[in-house]
Length: 280
Image (cartoon, rainbow, N blue to C red; front, side, top):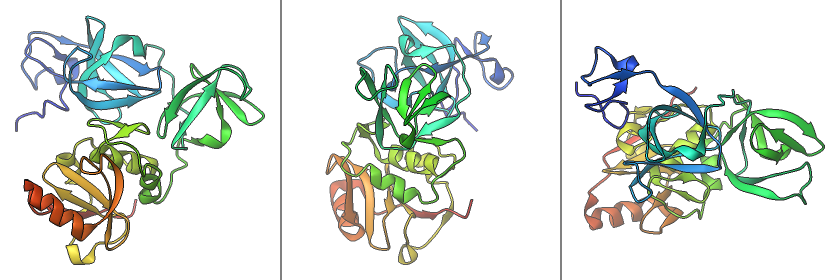
């Protein structure tokens, strides 16, 4: 089977040494583990700020780097496996082990343990941090300043209901390749909701279409996923769909029947599948 280039750190001239013997390349190199040290950064299809954003890294997420070129790093996002280019200045080789993640939709950090101190951010839901110390209502995180304790959750303290997380993004602008609180796309919304529930989740809709098990439209319930060609949404209940979409240009709630009719009329056809997750 042909390797998916979105998830395979390999080019004709260079590939990860973990793929030696599996793919062809002129040379194989070990990756360097780095982490994002700004609130969010685009993963791009080429080493240019004008290139397509195919994914996004959040603060603290790991990016395994194979090559540096013209101020960009080429490698693979550890969390979802996506391959692309990230601005090198946004990465650090200080590879800390995250202890917490941001549990609020967005939050700020402060230079000092005071909400009156200069701020930085916003840091979005799902960002990974390493807590160092706590002073009152703020926690100092390595390389990130002081963040409100109430906006952090320990790694492993997961939300049981992905829909509850997805609803936090209601009204967030639609952004191709986005997965943060300032801009998100349909598969990014599903991914963030499942991450918060402690579930692994791939990045793109065609990958997510293999999650869980198939169900009939007549049995849809809260949390089920509805797929079209190139699009996905999450059921809020048996009749309403929550999805980031380019029609509303935002995360919106829409009657499933209306979405099916509208998307079909736009030329994308009928839903291609309905999926439900089994218990963790």
